[in-house]
Length: 361
Ligand SMILES: Cc1cc2nc3c(=O)[nH]c(=O)nc-3n(C[C@H](O)[C@H](O)[C@H](O)COP(=O)(O)O)c2cc1C
Image (cartoon, rainbow, N blue to C red; front, side, top):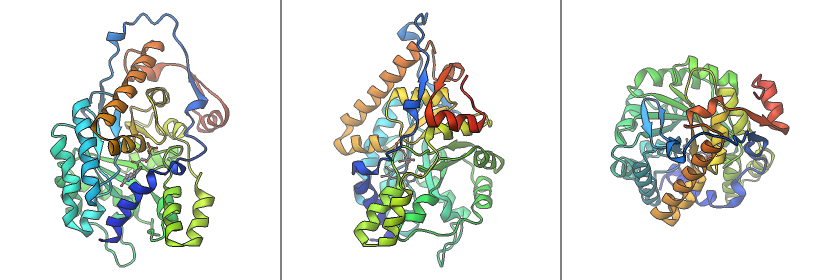
């Protein structure tokens, strides 16, 4: 088993530990929506369907990319993909780097397209693989096209995970040149490129730079949900790598909270996906009020997928019920209509929003 293959299995095992959720949250409790006592809207009129990158989704929800690359991932991806197909959601696969090292793992990714023939599927590769790292060469434009073809992807997500790489015992240390490599990837591909953080968020200036590189959408991947600094710290503990364990303790809470990262990235002319600590339809509504177009959810859907198809269905149905109810109670008939609704921000998130110039309406 290659290092990347065993790492993907270890990530799933570590993600089950409740300790991987960052203590300082994504900011949703500090955002409050205005109750509309006279909504003049019937529940049946509330519309959840949403457009993203030309796709029509049944709800503003993306199954965030998580896994692939080892045997156990096949069934997890199959269950998530079947749910995406049933509910009309977009679905991401986990980093396809593994398959470049070990082509025998292709099926664990390809299963997503097999089980979700019509859902928008998002391929995935790390920005750090777009440049050379030590004696490992950069992935080529042909490699990128083969990753897209492997899952018949409708978009490719390039993930930014430099916090994770810093804490990971065998992590990549080079980042110089990634921006230019992202621009080359945009040019090389026929499908849109989404740049996605993975739990440390992004600032407005970074979001604007990514837009200028030609990226089609941003997934802010904010802090407040699953923390990869903590996941890699747990792996470092198993390997007895004490300096990396200590670093993981110091940086476990690092990052821009998702609520702030959404407000920072909104209004730049790109669709915004809010991932990182979204746990309910109410959290999603708050992300949409702050300017997100859709939300992404990873860990809760992983836990549900490990239980089975019914658990994934139940989670999504409950998410949609809460979102639908909040849309009614705010008088917003659709997810897009939430963008015009007022909100109150308290505490640290208010400070973030004021610093960003995104003061609450
Ligand atoms: C087990 C696991 C594996 C992940 N692997 C990837 C990955 O390969 N590529 C990626 O872009 N994001 C990956 N992520 C990050 C998620 O897409 C998401 O950004 C992050 O978990 C925050 O969302 P959450 O708080 O809903 O879990 C992974 C997340 C989990 C839980």
